[in-house]
Image 1: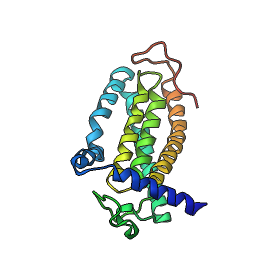
Image 2: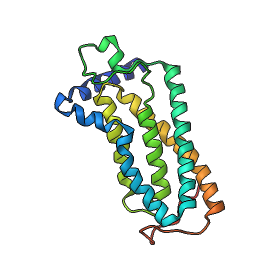
Image 3: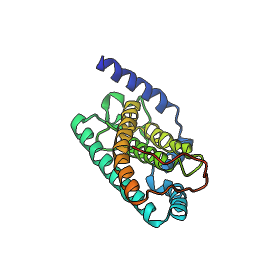
Length: 202
């Protein structure tokens, strides 16, 4: 069963990776860099600071920092435990794929996928009662993680399992956030949609 899943994962990777071309390499190299996504999150944080106050916003940032640290470190445990070679480092795939980038580290699970989904899921649950259209934030982990397939750094299975792990880590940290928010900021607050329901209650 596991061999079948791994073969399907590899076949899907080869197909998706083959869709790339040199004309778009620069675009996906830009997309895959975390720092290039900072402006989007700067806008979100600006709205939070402006409408929830700096103390509440600071608490959200601190919990998010803990979330990313936890997710990133546990992801490394998976990588070192499973030691799955990245596609671009696998000699069996030499000549079959476009390895735009190569890394010596291991592949399973994807840190980009787990970290981005953890952050997106956490922000969605926290800010959905306050900000309209928060669902669009999930475009970030989808596009961000696809860049890893395009560049030859991760299999689709690495991405999918990274998403699942990121959501689990976010759900854990949402418990902490809900406790701190209800303790220090029990009043109902609004950003741009005062008809929304109460914030999350875990």
